[in-house]
Each structure stands twice: as C-alpha cells, then as structure tokens.
Image: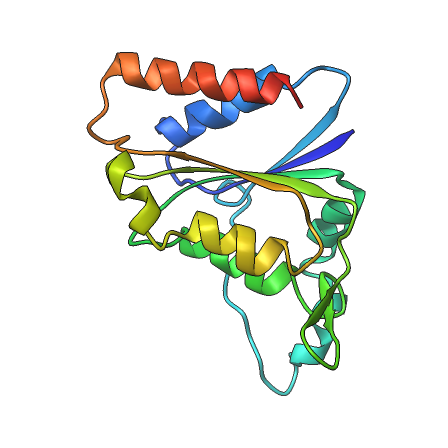
Length: 188
C-alpha cells in the first residue's frame, strides 16, 4: 500500500513531531511511505486569483502538480496536525485550498459534488489542549477535514484520532498516547 503522510507543525521538537516519527516507524515495512512536511518544504499556502491565476485552472497548476501526483499515487492519506483556535494550521488549510481543487479532487454535479479520490482511505491525527470531555462539543478542524473535505472528495473510510489536553499532559500520558498511535499505525 502507498501511504502519504501530510504533516503540519512548525517545531521539529514538538509532540506532533514525535507522533510523526512514531507513525513512520510503526507502519509495517511492506508499505511504501512518503511524507510531506509542509513547513520544511516552505509550502506557500496563499491562494491567488487574478488575471494570471484563474480558479478554473487550479487543477493544472504546476506549483502543486507534485502534490496532486503524490495524492493520486497514495492508497491512504495520513494527516498529522494540531488544532489551534478550533482550526488547523494555516499552512495546511492553504494546502487543501490549493491542492484539493475542482477538477482534481472533485467536480460539481447538478446537486452536490462528485468525489474523484475514491478508493483511498485516510487517518487524521490531531492534538489539542482542550480536555477530552469537551471533544463532543468542539467544532475542531479534524472533524471538518473528515466530513466536509475528504468524504465529499470520495475518500472513505476516514478515521479520526484526537489526542486531548496535550499541553498539560505528563510525560507518562504522552508515552501512552504514542503507544496508542504506534499500535494503530502497526495495524495499517
């Protein structure tokens, strides 16, 4: 299976980076893994519409071609990012705006969307500082990414793993989180 990890955190010493390393090392070696580290790649998240940049041409943009190709080749997408202010990091939102575009990820039908990324699955791993008890009430971007972006693009099933209260968690709690992620990644 071809697995594409899309990672968004600016600090290489963060807990999110520990999650990334845990996922990469725990996925069985029978799978092929590629990782896009949006911050390391200095991905430009700014979506531009003007005389030169037409919305209808986004699916043909040479700036995002390599990312579209990587997504096409992948059987499974894994997103790893923190929830900040109930949303994903701006760089990841810009990646979605610029790469998951009409003509590539979906097209418009008379009513709704036709997803073009069928046959792919996804796993979203998010971290947040809110307590676990608040999760059912949070309008976090992990849920938005799952239900309002990936599923309409045809990606299903989508698993969402949210790790809560990360900032105030003990080293023991973080170790347990990493063991959980490792076990889940090993079952891919």
